[in-house]
Length: 221
Ligand code: 6PG
Image 1 (cartoon, rainbow, N blue to C red):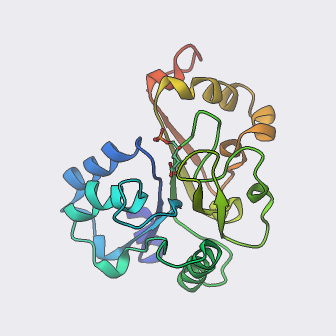
Image 2 (cartoon, protein in one colour):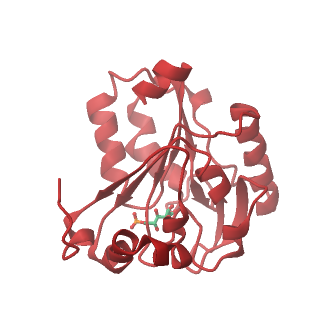
């Protein structure tokens, strides 16, 4: 984030939802709540469940609780997906307008995108076999998940792969099969797992816990 601010005067981050990032956001607030130039940082979401922002399943609500309520980030720098707008397709179009007016026409998007990986290899709300994976025009789509809550808003691969850097946060033994193929056979993984289709302009960094990586024979830093 500091590098992006030095380069561009600001940092735009798309946050992951789910459970894995909770301790990361908590620690970010604890350890950097006072030292990061939060007025230069803008927070977006990589995906959202199509529920009210105060719903217990909301990714925004999770970030509000673990991070936003504990850092001096100006409210105008917080850009939640507009799940109060219906239908969901209109909410996706509205968020896309927000992104395009923020990033302009440079063709690039976020400085950093945080993503999780599901046991089925999904990432954000891009699930295996979904037509959303073939989206080549829009940055944000409304899409159906195979699990509750089914209706989602999600960045597309087009938006994610226009980012500078991606960091995957992966935890739990249920991710082991997907992680094994992602790391051992990325070619084949790319045909199956949306997480393997993530190829941003810059680097991809994997943060994987021992439970999700065991028996893969990878060096654990
Ligand atoms: C969501 C997330 C989703 C999540 C993975 C991993 O809205 O649920 O965006 O893509 O990152 O499902 O979830 P866990 O971190 O809870 O295992």
